[in-house]
Image (cartoon, rainbow, N blue to C red; front, side, top):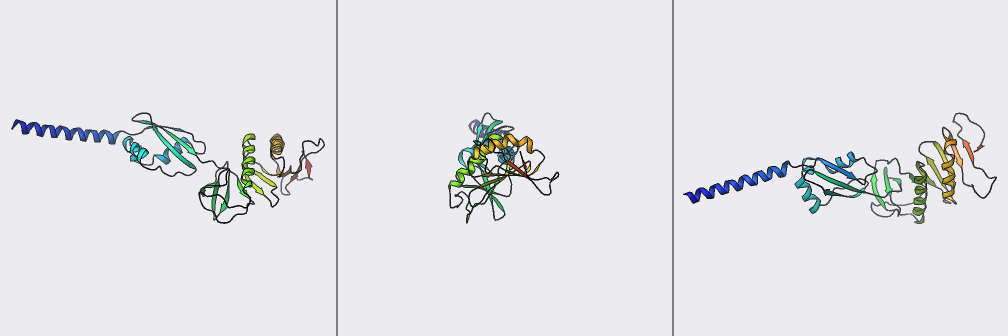
Length: 252
């Protein structure tokens, strides 16, 4: 009889331990999340996209998902890692997609990287990524290169966007004509800038120096023929007809 009682007690203790372990596993949650590597989204936005429900924050369930299941697909994010730093804390490291521009296609914004590969299709318009127009392409497929005749265009777009970022010049649109002359539309000012197709780095540097003089103006700045080797050459600025303070074409 005593042997049977001991076995029953042992089973009861094991059952209680299992139940206690389950309670602990269910109750332990990730309450401290440190987000790293984010620039397009705030830390709060990234955290809310990854941890959407109760089980996402459960430490045990999150550990299993992180090591044995594919990650969630998040817009404009290539991948992410969850690095556990304790039972209640982790580092959430995100790897954002490299994006240099987007084209409009079928009522969507098709974002592409420096190699022209379409990395995202979204209705969202990122504030720091310019629309690129003037490219001739056919059918677009996600995760495949934008089918343009001249793939060298992507290197040119990358060069322009890098220079604009370097000088802190916000641009909402880059337009290429049939001769590959570039026109950019600035974001904060109602100003279009004719860059032509040569010496783009120099012209963007000049544009950066001119920004204080352009403040509050609306019109077109023509830098297409700018040549720093010609001492007497100056750029011209054409005011819009409907802009305040309309005057003749002027020099800056």
